[in-house]
Image 1 (cartoon, rainbow, N blue to C red):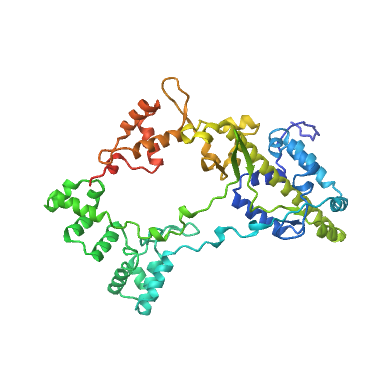
Image 2: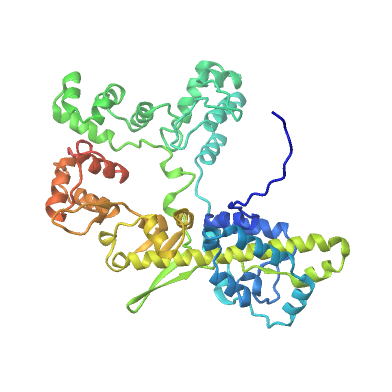
Length: 505
């Protein structure tokens, strides 16, 4: 069989992701804090890109940030829609137009336009209150301060520092090795190993550890729950029965098997009740008041606001804290006069223009998706979580004409402030739960809140079982779910089982 070379023509279609399109998709899924960080990086790396914070001279937004002709083009042909319909052709035509721009003529025309004031007066110029908050107390700093005030020798102090450095987030002594940066398993440490590193005798190391465990908070640096409770009980002067229960019967306390404790210790059941009540007053997490991150004080800044105006709900974006980007025309004009820098500046101008357009398109897409959610969840906004309707990504995607993956990117790590409170956009997407009697299906989140309400109103001495909750939901609300579904939702809410919720005293 002979071999020969031929020239063939083949017509085919393929989807090509332009760099500008990749940048737009990446910006779309960033959270607000990540976007601020990304903008700061671009400002540091692009000399022709500027914002209100870097230049106090009033500037207009110009065509690059979505106003005038460029803004109309972006609004009519959103970047996300171009992804799903002939993305390759639209992207190539837009990129060709950008490359053919006469930047010198563009900047001359920009200077003749009316500049819009960008600075604001009043209290908005002040730094946010989050920057003025004091730093919460740190457990390790608190312990090191007590260590410095103690009368320890040099090697004892070194051993104490090793102990403090190996505390976990709960305040327990964690000597597990884990894995190193290269994936190699690290052997577990021991008190003896820490003592050798500090050149301290093992007996003296045990004494130093016992002293550290009596630092404030008492029970810190314990190697387990039993040791933590034992140290606190000794400091508080608990009686021998209570110490015995801590040492040998914590598992029975957890299972509330008080009869077994009374039988093993040969004491009356009432005495066991009294001892367990005292033990329950002890702290099981020594570092509770010294957490590195206090979830109660984390400030979340919403990306959009939903406000009620009469009978209508309006959606507005939150631009506070985000710089208004524009092109520094004066610097660009000076550098374009240099033939050596002209190619470099032209590339930076194209990059700046695409970034500004991508951020503007991100803002428009978030508002568009939020408006669709508001339209579908109007009853929730007016009456509360009990009226939250089932909704999936496909419902919003079909309504706004976007792909489900785009909706997923838009709603990830984005928050909306509503009349019912602050929620993540993902919160509104729930599976549907069937209701008996031909009633409309209910959202899974509404079922969770119904379970939470039932448990909150139960008799603590005789709590409802999961099967009893199933019966109550079906009889009162017409919600037909299985017992395992109730158990799953209860665990998601962080609620214990009925045997552990039962109040014995």
